[in-house]
Amino acid sequence: MPLEVAMPIRKEHKEFHTIDMTGEGWHTPPGYPPGIEQKILAGRLDEAGKTGNRTRLLRFAPGAYTTVPFVHEYWEEVYLVSGDLIVGGCSVEEPSLSFAPNTYACRPPGVHHGPFRSQTGCLLLELHYYEA
Image (cartoon, rainbow, N blue to C red; front, side, top):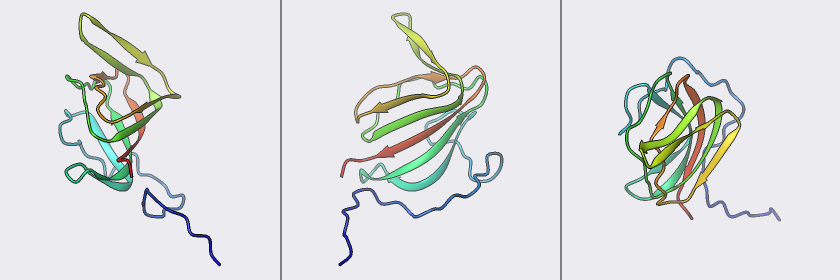
């Protein structure tokens, strides 16, 4: 008898394949300024319906920045693959923090985070998902 496993997170099955880091599939996400682009690797996040999940790469060009903090209703895990990421500093009272590769964040829904900027550019691996 086959073992049945509950799968609260559903994504398409994808084996190892080359990711095009320079060409097709990169675009600026809604609400982000030019110089910040995403590439969806797997899944689909439906923010209006509050369902789904996605794995994406997010890259900042050198000098790219956001101007306001973000807050959303899904879980977010972020791994800084390369480059520098500067977080915060949107007021005198809030100092900015600088992060180097191999740093990680896990944020529950409703947490304000950012704004973000990068001096040299950076590449982030992000997982977004709603609770099952």
